[in-house]
Amino acid sequence: MKIFIIGGSGRVATELIKDLVKDGHSVTAGARHEDNIIDLAGVTKVHLDLHVSVDELAKLMEGNDAVYFTAGSRGKDLLQTDAFGAVKTMQASEKVGIKRYIMLSSVFALQPEKWQLPGLKELMDYNIAKFFADNYLINQTKLAYTILQPGGLTEEKATGKISLDVVKPGTNPIPDVAQTLADILKFDNTIGKVIIMASGDTPIDQALSEIE
Image 1 (tube, helix red, strand yellow):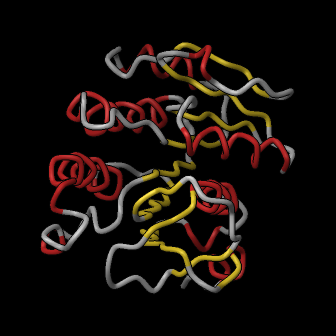
Image 2 (image 1 turned 45 degrees about the vertical axis):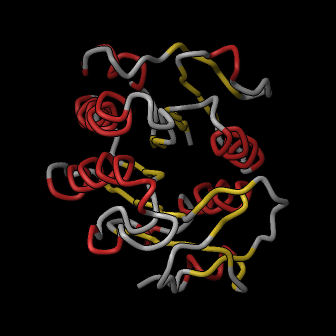
């Protein structure tokens, strides 16, 4: 497949790109600082600024089969990047006929009643941005979406195992989040689902295959 990654220079995106290329996909990765995108055969780098118009984003994204949104402003530009920037990429996807859209979100982003839990209170503004982006994707588009909501990202080695039975915020090694994102493409049963994840004991593909 031809895959377009928004936020292609980030920590998760870097690992995701490796996984997608390993799976035989062709990747175009966009970022504001495109020079920071990993150099790999099969990867095209493009300059992408989420402040531009939907039409300009659509021109960049046209011709791809699926989109990943992994961009994040780390709290510096929540409205125009994490919230409305995401919305514009959804609109651009629909404009050029891309159906499959995979969103990297945040644990419990759609459940404000849980935002007072330890570890989430400090992320209130970020979760508000993701709340509106995730809701738009679910309720205002006809995209074949999957939303992945991991807990805190850690720079640990991959375990290849996760849990989708999450009752409180956990942590996730970045390579496991990236592998889960990549593997979501293999499982059509993930379409239309919000997947909350943490580190666990179930192999990633098995956990995804069992989603109903």
